[in-house]
Image (cartoon, rainbow, N blue to C red; front, side):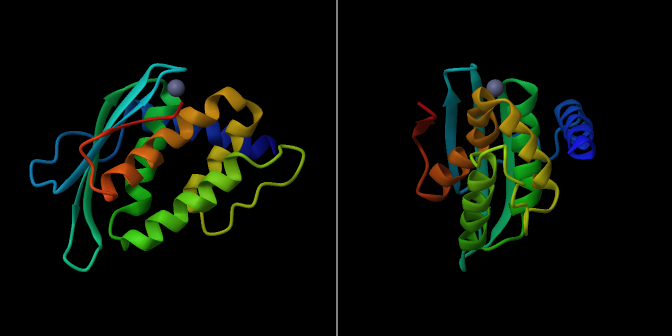
Length: 151
Ligand code: ZN
């Protein structure tokens, strides 16, 4: 677990400082805003879906804590190029992992780099920071144009 914790900190700092897929997406056809009032995180997620439902491009913008930004950055990397249905499944697995009891080993199968967020189980108040990007992604896929709140 110590290795995972170290990796968690390194990865979060890296993605916080140099977020991937950050900025506007003028060609976006789906977008949504997300707000986590508990922490003050605000994210905007924009995507471009192909006719057959593949996330061809995705970007985010916003302000918030390191965890919310790092999670958004890693989320965009994880879902880019995937069919919408796979992205939703990934969120289910991710959500199940971050909300599982920390006394049990985290189920990180198929999560790739997202496995580092098993570390947020140590800080339950941060779970909403880690899932905000995913809730916002889901809202964007569902039509967008509205603000989702984690509350
Ligand atoms: Zn936060």
